Image (cartoon, rainbow, N blue to C red; front, side, top):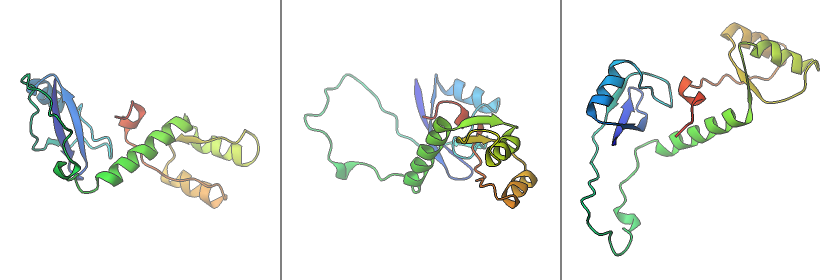
Length: 149
């Protein structure tokens, strides 16, 4: 198994696990790789150091925190976004293209209040806001429908 450090054109950094270089190139060529933050398919390998397990003994003491490499800029923000996305996905019902209709039904007391998510056009979102229905446009890439790593 080969673990690669990847990044997208927007500067988001993430890992990908592949059977080997050929597997990475095949998935890249087929457009199967996607940034988990923004959903772009513009993914490139970043420089990374391989970890080789040659049977050496583990160090007697754990490495000090001073030796730990500095995290990439924005890593804390990226981690917080992924945490929020996981929580939204876990704690809301996906009503898909029925979002506008279901938000109105809840607002006018025709359906029980609950956390929902789905798709709405910019025009539909503006209409909901004009009616006093609180909505928050939050673009989530398709990868968030899968298990987020």
